[in-house]
Image (tube, rainbow, N blue to C red):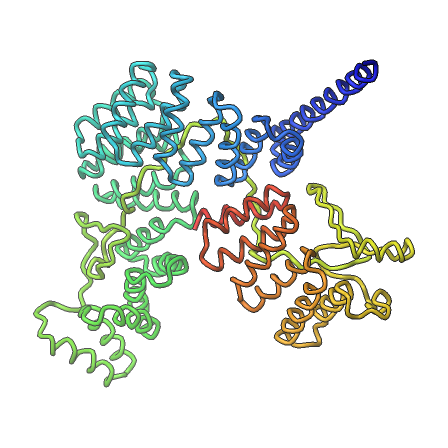
Length: 596
């Protein structure tokens, strides 16, 4: 009895220490979250989850960190784990809804918001996001129902009426849209986006003066928004205010130097007022952005011809005619350039093509820019070459309400595979990862080696200059084959195909000797990638992961191999896991894939 009593006394401090230790890990992880060190915070939450996987909060906080890193798949999975452990925390449903929105899973996001609103029926952020999901789904009736409910609960919130206006516009009910926008502006006259929304209705109705007035107010509130200046330039141009339109295009390009519409339309405007050389500069820029833009090519050709460069004009005309063989005005212009260069035979060929078609039109006269004619940017009708371009109709960009907004890892990284694991006399220490490399054979060898010649398993280049020092007489062991494989791979005097072939052969022999060595499978996977044998590489990476589930490099490389093999979802899942294990470069790849 006394022994049992003593055992209980000893047990309680241990339990208390474990609880304290886990709480401390979560607390440090949350502190790292606060300071926006998301990768480090994930490592602390990983430890807490390993110690006590039944707690919901480490899963939830790790989901937040992944959300900041744009890893929406991984964040959603962690939210699901947290909900399984505690289904009554509203914030988890809210976060998972945001993750699903980012993946365009609007149905699933709405389900999350439905549950969240059962527990917290007056959470405006959740109402707002659910309404936006319905708008994205074009479920306008339910969206209006949500917005009507919001208007009852938060009657002085101007944003609600602006969202109502968007729904009415989608339903082609301009009258109700204007009424909703006017109500929104009565409540909040300092929202530049709402003034811009109001101006778009006026511009669509060709009410240029009224639209310019609304844009004046929008620009006053959002002075660095390039698109507003481009829209006002359109309104001014249609009121014959060319100087004002030019000033707006200049201002738009000051704020957004790579703006396609700004350069294209300014080029047309400069051509109309006779500023041909600077118009060419604008079209040069457009063609850097879109080298195959035929409208820009044709307009530049006209300008090059006007400025005395017929040879360059012919080059541009020819590219357009190649795509549009029956573009008679283009053929006439090219024939004119050929004649200027004394190339009579080529000119006659173009003129014969025109006559043969018996086109009864006037040729060679460039029409003036028409105020009444505009084309969508995506409209590729070459006959509209001289019309101002306007942006295609795009879905309005919504800002979903969230408490989880913060900086993300935006580092630019190349999509290179992680290097092979080799044996080295230098140990690598990571400030973030806590991965310990281990192999039984290497450990046995180290027991025989002096302290200053210990070997470590590292991902990178081997610094072993003379493998024979470590191989001894046993050249057929898995360890010896591993060292030889890496040594031959690093010998750049051998051509690459031969090195790759030797590498696969030696690693295959090593695997036969040590089938439980995860590093050998991983290395052979890298070798198969060099041969573009992605399916075999994926199989080897999978085996490495089966043997060592904490090898982040194997997840990372398998993710890249799967992306190369057109397995997008599986590849992203692997990259998410690699990031979770501390390879933060995976998040940059994930972000790049999402933005494609």
